[in-house]
Image (cartoon, one colour):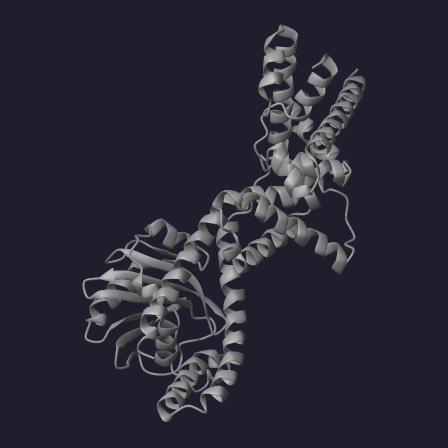
Length: 250
Length: 185
């Protein structure tokens, strides 16, 4: 190790000295000072490059990915369905019936964009619940702050929810960006969709709806529609006012 | 069909786990990556796009990331490839570095602010061969080994480039310093 080599390596990587270099630095006050100056210079560079990162970048990344992925998987599934229906055709009736019902169930959601004229709000909401059914199985608590970070992008704020929040995500409701949230009500997991009402996504159909498994209620608001969905028999109405009342809009 | 229930549940759990892993990755690395991208291309909009695209691709190949510790170099590799792709697609017409966006919002004093602006300008003037290892070290906190891996160079070359980059900056800074002093006389 000579002085020149020491200086080169210290300037290049002052925070990554190997043992040999460190010992060499320790053996003289001048070298020690040179090392400190080099570290200070790196810090100066770091400070100069420390620009502010745009607000909500992380949220936007996650939203962007989920929207693009959904569009892509929808497209792939659509192709798959065509292929699998054909190959299943050779099997027995049960398989054929299953294939058919699967195609209908999936396409009810997939073609929702085109069929939105005919699809009622309730059908749309239920299809969305089934499409992301895994959201109901989560147990880990999500803070109300996290919910509000997302809700803020729609211009809303929620003070409280009557139960532990276990899922929150941005979702695409026929092209309208909304929030898909699940909390643990006293009657099991309850899904809440909060979707801006600008494009009247939930315009058609009655306020109350259900199928053989779930029941729901739509609260049509000025800024956003709030949809509640829970297992059939749950007192959805009881929660309706509490939740709609807890959301404030800017 | 009924036997599939279990495997369906498994798929759903895996998806949820993947989503969680992904969101953790975004939260840990998005700021560093944005800064790196920003100084790489000197444009906030392009930097934003690059980081978005990087994480989208990361999601699509998340299964190939086996070791969480390798996440940073892995993301950087994706981002650099995306940046290179940008040039294949279209040669962007760069405007000069916009001083407004370069001013540090947390500046302590006029001197520091001026000095930081000078550093920013000088870094943006560095050749890519020097700029990239420097940004990887300073902004991303990469070690020499990591930089060598990401840039596909040997360790000594990385060391030499870091040394030269910093030397160039130091020279430029002392030049500017003298000019400032000269101007105030």
